[in-house]
Length: 251
Image (cartoon, rainbow, N blue to C red; front, top):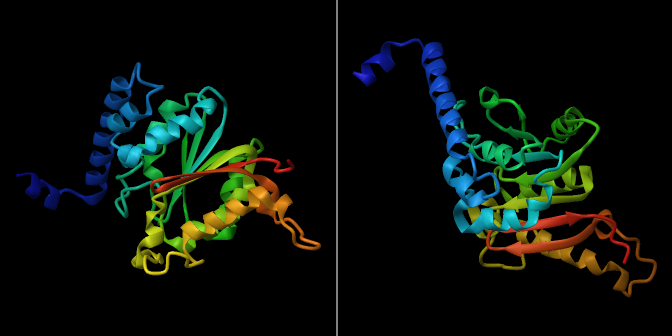
């Protein structure tokens, strides 16, 4: 009977019913989340995001808890749900609950505009489209971006390019996070397991940036510090994740 109704029902009506169903589910998830706002593991489970895997939420809570009651802007690359316009957004709702004063922004290569809600703004575009990213940052407004999370394509080239574009847009004191960096070893994502030192992988790109922390110790005549030398103050590597802190590296 369900399949018969699906075949006979207009696509627009079917889409609206799915959206309504998701809205109801989100409402009940918000109720279940009452009292657990400071527990990212529990919130991830309630809202159905896979960030609870590999201890991601544990690391997030350690690094991001200082922002919890601040009026920050968080930008996450990737909404989830692939090409289904009504699927995804689970982690965005988790962040909305964890950061009650924050504005949550995201974008995806697919149209996910139907998943927007109060304090969650979604755009459509590519994570390596410089003009698009500039427009997103401009739309976020004067307070800038405090946290960027790359949970997008996980393609090595794209991860590196997005970082080069967006890290300079991050506020001082902000944190840039890359998830699923394990694709640095997967060939179909541009990674390499045979040559661990391949400079084109995302992991080796970020490992090379760790030298920026010590650029003042370089014994290179007339060395001119790069932007990353001057603005990365710490890096934290975990299984499948890296956190990069931005600030004035002038020690």
